[in-house]
Image (cartoon, rainbow, N blue to C red; front, side):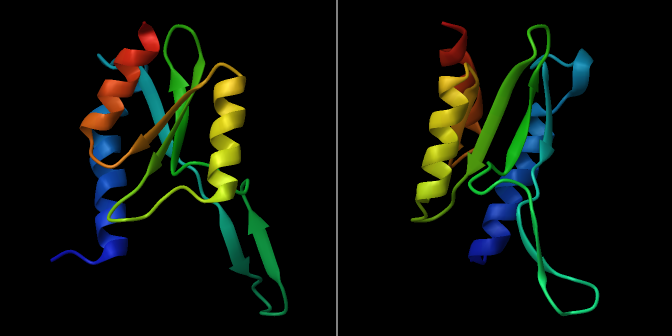
Length: 116
């Protein structure tokens, strides 16, 4: 059995492999990991915060129209946090594509739905 953190990392990597094919690929997406959270400063005296609270695991752009894409990867019984829900609302309100992916195929399904 895969550990929860390992399953999450595997899902992220599988989605990157399947869909982040650069500007010339069939899917027309450029995706990258969005680092968020807190890190201990080099001197160990304070925390440094990076990224935006609730930001999705993967973010990127859709070729041709520059549409923002956010993919939140969830495994097991995990659910969106309140911050992630607020991020989803913002992305959709601004005309972006938001995907809550539990399997790689969720991304393709949501991309197809976004075209219609």
